[in-house]
Image (cartoon, rainbow, N blue to C red; front, side):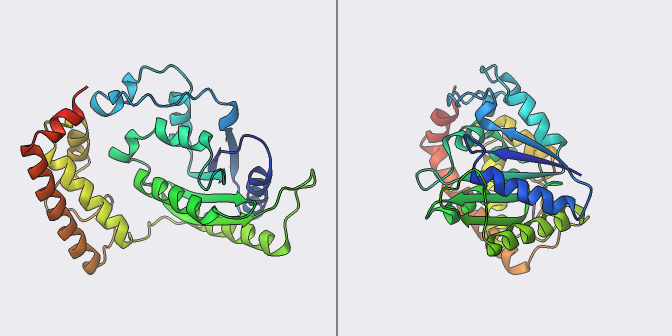
Amino acid sequence: MKVLVIMGSPHKGNTYAAAKKIEEAMQRRAAVEFEYLMLAEANLSPCRGCFVCFLKGEGFCPIDDDADAIGEKLENADGVIFASPVFGMNVTGLMKTFIDRFSYIFHRPRFFSKKALLLSTTGALGQRDVLKYLGMVAGIWGFEVAASVGLVTPRMGAERWFTREQEDELDRAAELFVRGLTRQTRRPPGLMDVIIFRAQRGSFDILSEEAPLDHEYWKQQGWLDPGRKYFVEVPVNPLYNSLGYLAERIIRRRIKKEKMKGWYKSTYSP
């Protein structure tokens, strides 16, 4: 199994040390090959907000950097660890730049066969906010989040120690991640997962002229087919499906009104 660590820390500090602990714990349980993508060392420029990836495709991005190579790493991994310390009550700028550069995946998700582990460290507060944000990103991109761990780790010395309780948390996260990677089936989606799918389905079905690339992608995946309940064929809670259907109807009605005002035409125009 191949695991890619997206390291959002600008240095090999507490978050990196925690990731290494997870690596050690996973390798005690299974044959796992780790690769660390240190975003601080990658040539990844900020997104320019030009909409080219949405309108023409990611292959037409005008920025020449490591984004394509990083995309290949994501495709080749069986699992991904999204790791970021808390900076300013959120992910680091490095992690945000990474997420922004691949924002087209929010429209065209693809990692449904892959699992994710979320990792965050902080000196005091904010780790829950970071984990929530990373979970939203990973989930919409298609990952099944198998585990998450957030640690309060005051600035450490060179020894990089953790408390016994934190060691146990990291070990437990590693165990859950291994289980997720070796499990052949995918867990049923939660309520928000279903609502997000339905809201996007309604949006991209109606916006066939304004967002033709997204519409065609969803059509090819079969996600616009009548009766489709979720991105992948898994059991969906009937109540979640009903609430998702309601959310889709509401978003369709709202977009139709906005289209009559010409809002989407101006928004999606290059």
